[in-house]
Length: 253
Image 1 (tube, rainbow, N blue to C red):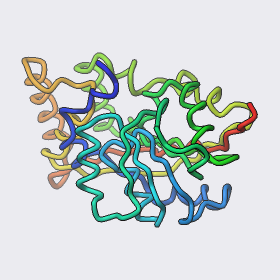
Image 2: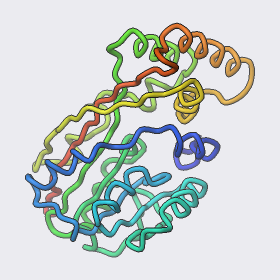
Image 3: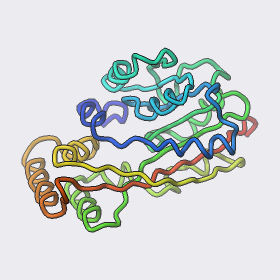
Image 4: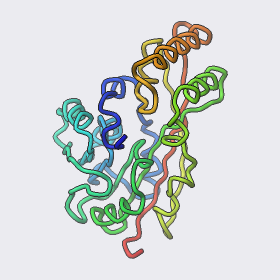
């Protein structure tokens, strides 16, 4: 499936059940790059606006660049109260933003869909000299018995799981993307407490799981069994490591 279209039928689950990002990510950006609310931000692959909202709440002007019409319209609806939000139809490789127009480029849970070298070329074009780039991921933990069982369920029912969203960092081309300037990895604790409806929604927000048919039915029955086994006071916890890869792009390389 075209990566720009694969979330069209998952917008509502994505909005309601995907985890956000902790505000602690601002710490390294402020201390390392002097990031402030005065910076203009481009959120590339902004989806329904989860990462966009984080920076809007911080006070930044944010361009939300998103190719998927359904997700972009949802973000426009959810973020309509922010005068500093600008919705843009575009991709990482062709943002349509003016040259040298942004101070910080963000990609939340999206970089693995980009063509890294083409995106780097575009980012150096739209970024001011020495533009900062921040790549964010919420990576699910597989530490507790429930988390291990939940991950096993996904691997059993979702064939694309390993190939699409959980490739090793080296395979994503992050080091090549940042080039000689390099990057720094910061990590933060994150998590969700979910009831059964929330757990189903979180699972179905992933593009690699089925949404209908016999496999879907079996998957949901298995998920309900996991919930019954591991829930405490009507909820289960999914832990995440929020990873922030940040650095500046050297326009000369």
